[in-house]
Amino acid sequence: MFVHFPRMPASPYPPIDPALFSQSAATAQALMNDAAAVLKKLAESRSFAASVMSAAQEGKTEEVKRLIRSLGIHSKTDVYFNPDGIRLTLSPPPGAFPCCQLVVGLRWNVFPPFGG
Image 1: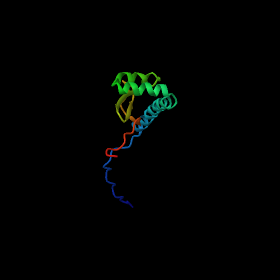
Image 2: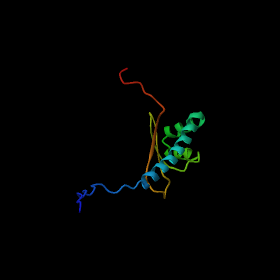
Image 3: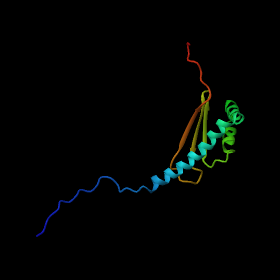
Image 4: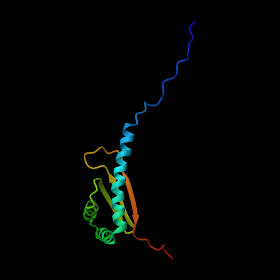
């Protein structure tokens, strides 16, 4: 006796392969370690924090990057700052697969609201 089973339709989704996802997560952990080193130094060294703020206030982006890199981090670091604070974007180092980014924003000034 032959039993006929209905054919299952093909999945509309590609096969699952978590290799890149796992690699991205591992790389992101390295970015987090670098971010932790920067945050630790900024939190514990007022002179370092003042140097970063001073360079930023003077518009010296490359000096801000140099100060951050002086902490021995391996991530590519882009910086953006304005009178309110700084944003650090950490990415895998040059030559590595660009799988992820970690963005850290920190305030260093709070302006009073207008009209108040």
